Structure formats: C-alpha cells, structure tokens
Length: 80
Image (cartoon, rainbow, N blue to C red; front, side, top):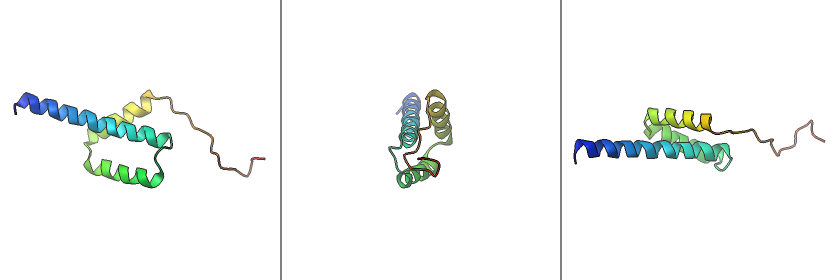
C-alpha cells in the first residue's frame, strides 16, 4: 500500500470516528440513549478514540446545532 493510500485510509477512519462520536452526542442530547448505555459508550470513546476526533466532534456538534432544553415531564413541587 502506498503512503498516499495509507494517508487516505487514515483520514477516512478519522472522519468515521468523529462522525460516530457526533452521532452519539446527538442521540444522547435527544434522550435516545439512556445514562448507563451512554456511560459505556463514553468510556469506550475515551479509551480508544483519537483526542483530536473527540475535540472536533464536540466542538462541531455543540456549535452547529441549535439544541434547546426540553422541560422535564416529571412533576415538581411548584407545579399544580
């Protein structure tokens, strides 16, 4: 395999890794991933992913999407 092919393969793998991290951030924010499952995923990400991919995914996902807090469905003492 040539150096150019290796570089392309590495770039593609880094892009896939970053996309997977961004997708997990998105699913977790939307509440599609429960806390236990998310914790396991984050432990795997932090152990295996390139720190640059993590930083890129966090900065991209949290900067470019308009996430808004959704009121909790739990009753509070101030309600009704």
